[in-house]
Amino acid sequence: MGDGGTVRAPEWVQKVANVLFCLVAIGGIGWGGRETWLVLSGRHQIDEACAGLVPAGRVLALSPAGGKVTHRVSYDPIELDDLLSGQECELFSTEAGEQHGRDSEGRLFFTGAVGVMPGSQQVVADDPLEQLLNPYGGTAYPAQPLGGGIAGVVGDAGVVVHLPCAEGKVGSRPINALWARAELLDPKRSFLEGGQLGGSDRNILADTAVRTANNLAERLGCAERLPDAPDDVPALSEGPIPAARAEGTCAWYSKAGYARQRTYPDQVLESRTDAKLWDEQCGLIVNENRATGLYLRGTAEHRSLIRPERPGQWFVSLHTYSGADATKVLLTSTSSDEKPEPAEPGKAGRSTEEPVWWASSICDGHPQVHTMTLAHGYNRLVSPRMTKIFRAYVDDVTRRRGCSDIAFPTASSFRRDGS
Image (cartoon, rainbow, N blue to C red; front, side):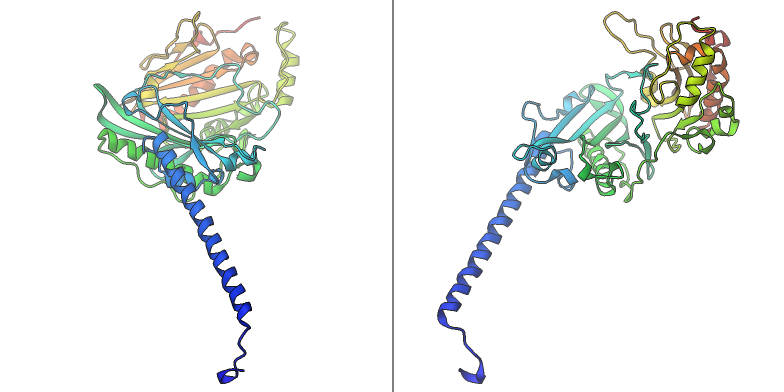
């Protein structure tokens, strides 16, 4: 027993304890060193692939970004001199690979993309065979405005934002705006909440898209910057919903009571309204029971009518395209044997090939193009009646946005389709 009555451990016990302490410390340093190396390596990979535009720290904070992060080496990094067609970078992580059953392999989990407007891409109106709903009956999550004073869209996997860039240039070509997208690829169930992206990932993607746009604006010499992204981006609303409950982009349809008439759609797929959006949509859906009834009554007059067999197969899709997008809208997709059909601002009409109509207007000095697409089959039953539906939609959008110089298709363009 030593001074003060303290019991001193045997010397061999103290040596063992010291060795164990050192081993734990060394192990901690080794683990910490590995984690530090992975973070530094991940940052380098992101900066290299995305030309330093995408904030690496935010990407590494995403749920699927754990483990080793790499980029697709077969892709060239983003090139600022080639933004007219859009540029993107793709990132892989071992965390995403493990969630897909690839224990030792990385898997694509994130895409960052940037571009300018006007760019080289065309905007194509909805196809009459479009699938507005999951064909197997799953819940749809229509895209919503980002809000916060930002021209942005939140989708089921990512966020896209636009930023004005007056008098900007890419090389010698003038531009007037730019865009940036941050997106996760096919996140597994462990990364989702209630079937969609978790709140943390949604917030990080919004912040990433905004920061990427601002970084690109600085590189291109644009004067404007986007404000900070909202701190709490709401989850997407489920759809479709009964038409009577519409209160966003399809509220006009609810107020008019069209759904009470059995010929018209009785469900809607909508988003919140936002005048900053360059693409605003209202989807009108004929539910399966009503579609079947319409089909059975319609076969007496239309003998070759095909029966609808999946949810939402019969629909009316209404879109408004603004600004640069409004100058590039095509009514049908183009291929080697098809002649492009532009929806020209200042004019109105109908596609010669498909049940797709367009109207136009001027809002705050900028062109807008409004389109309506009817699903194949359904168009044969309702085309002549759709003039008032399209007119009501265009009136709603142009009133909300304070538009003028409205051009609307002639009544004769809503001719009866087929027999």
